[in-house]
Length: 545
Image 1 (cartoon, rainbow, N blue to C red):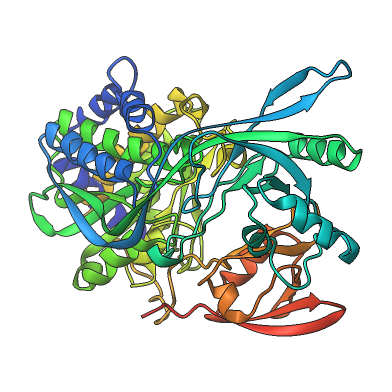
Image 2: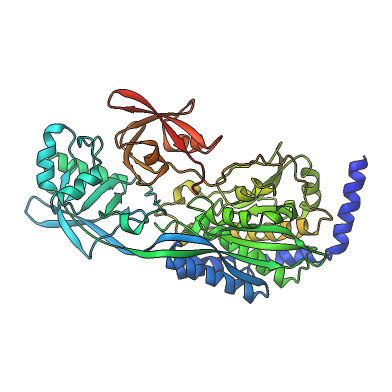
């Protein structure tokens, strides 16, 4: 009874400071025809394009976002957080498979493919025959002779006398390597590439259905040639990388903050729409809405667009570390980074839930077809797959919005499918309103949100990456390549190793592997099968100095 009276009193205080007409104004401003969220997204992903950390596009995007915020009347800045040793920019690419029909006529078939960031392209149009990677020792010598000036097709189970396929291909003078890229061609890359050591051979990830057909043709004795034009460019660094920060200054508590945001960087295999152009656009739109209705929050609302998220939460980690003194003055950090589905809920520790139930009532009433749920959790996770984790781990509540809807995030996530058409305008508009209403309500609450149990110290926030490519056609986790300088390479991982366990957890696919290495301490035990023997390797994810 006493808690109910207190909450009622505090809610009355909030109501007194937020004009009664402001909620409908926010709703109206965020809905069609006034909404500009899809315009923001179009300018970002189509006008600028993908935004790899260390690319010229990311620099352009940060300047664009700052100008957007400033056009709404907000104070905004582009704030450097670090450097990338080698910049990488991607231009157009095209590839064709050439075969000969029964009448001797040459036929061409366009290929669907991608290449990882920080990997080389071709020197203009490059055409040549192809050769299958050897499967048994007896095929190795013939393969080496045929590989010069040819494209290597990396079928599963290549036998190379202990050498990686890439090393052997370079020695043999091959044009490049074709690999099975999966039905959704995933883009990744090693941002720690050094100028003196960047790879020298194109690696082409072809969509699975085409790759399997290529292997079948070659195994059937057909002659298959390929031509590729891949415009991948390295830029000698260091390249300065930045976050974008904008604020509506609080009227009463300007040194306390409600943070909302998403990451502006993306992988560059497509347009970076749902990861995370959508979260960037809703953050910008929430700022526009609040400015348009003349919102005057008690606390400062800070709009954050981080970069370096895809490389391990680098931008948010650097910002949170630099501003550790602010952590006790951050009420919450809310992150939209789950694609285009609408924001369907929020989590909170027990002390937060009754507050959320009170002040987020307008959010819950927005649309009965898009329900909003508040879920109680014992404590906020201190690790996570997005930028909120950088703050939670340092004691400031970080929360990742729950999302629901018809969009298949896995279809677009880091793949060639992450294009503008994947975004759902209705959901984008709704999410922008949710963010604007929630940010203002929390900023006007009389106190900072409850902190709950403090985060344990010395927890690495960066997403842990093994640094290995896997044979998609093999059963289980069979290593195909190990990235030089990666944690996997430091542990002694080798091509053709089969990973079977992380600590005491059996792993059989990449999702299980990622989950296992991203929980617990920074030292992990990796059990692998190599040449009929079982070996134990030690992975060390301590932050590099």
